[in-house]
Image (cartoon, rainbow, N blue to C red; front, side, top):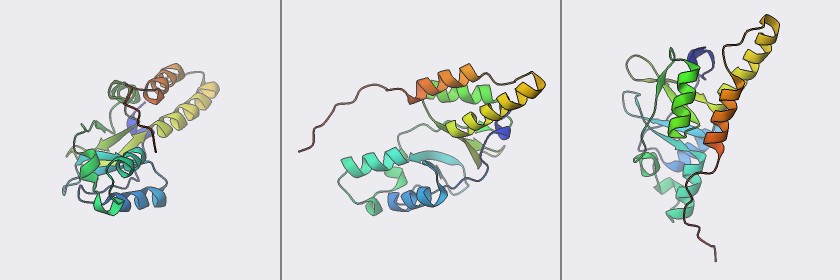
Length: 164
């Protein structure tokens, strides 16, 4: 199965200079937990998650309107796929880099969609339902579950700070 079969092609994005407040509003209005950061040619250069916004608010001691996408996404590598790539390849990249979303790009490197864990789960469920009717499946549910365990599990421990 291909990424284009599972990805969301309606995706909002922002520029590096977009404030975290604007991005948070984009997330709220579009019911998403991540917004790709693109350059002026619409090529992905970063990703801002709701967690990035929460951590910036907690750790940088500045209001969200004073912080930008660049403040929270500039040191992260952007892993992308093409719509014509396989879902298994996307799962492998997501697992390898411990990311829950992949920007999807066209032949010019421009953002055309996003593939999230939720997209993969929905697609897997639909594929399993179809497989019961046709008795063949092209996506392995155990592979998806292994991926979820890896990217949703606890990662390297960070220093814990106590409030107060």
